[in-house]
Amino acid sequence: MFNSFPQQPGISADLQLRSYLDCVDDQSGAAVEAACRRYRMGDVPGHDPRFLPSSAQFTAEVRKQQAMVVAKKAEKIEAPRNDVPASPPVAKWKLQAWLDFLSGVTSWDEFQTKIGRKQAAE
Image (tube, helix red, strand yellow):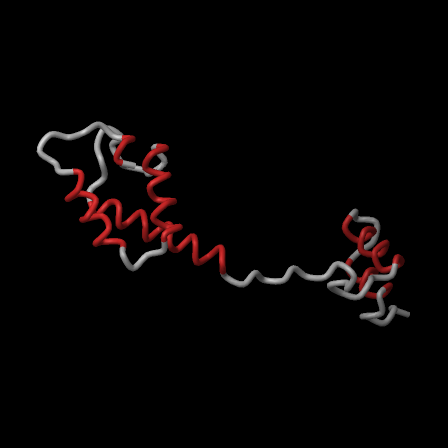
């Protein structure tokens, strides 16, 4: 990552690297590598690509990447099976009664009577 940014006068690359490593020694190598890649590619929002990130900026990005590593390793939720219907099938005559009601062919009372929720008026 250091080769991707211009050398800054007065900053020791060795001390900067030690500072980075001291801040992220409890994070995974995959997270550190991902953070370095994002800085090199200019994908870290708010970072000025003319300068190396500070130790705090670098640590914050490594922590975000560590959360991504953990999330990728987490157990996946099983998708619902397609062979089991989510609800019982509806009879065609009930669907037709519903469509008739929605299109205005029948009234609410007639719909209720057709599906057996209401007794027919005599």
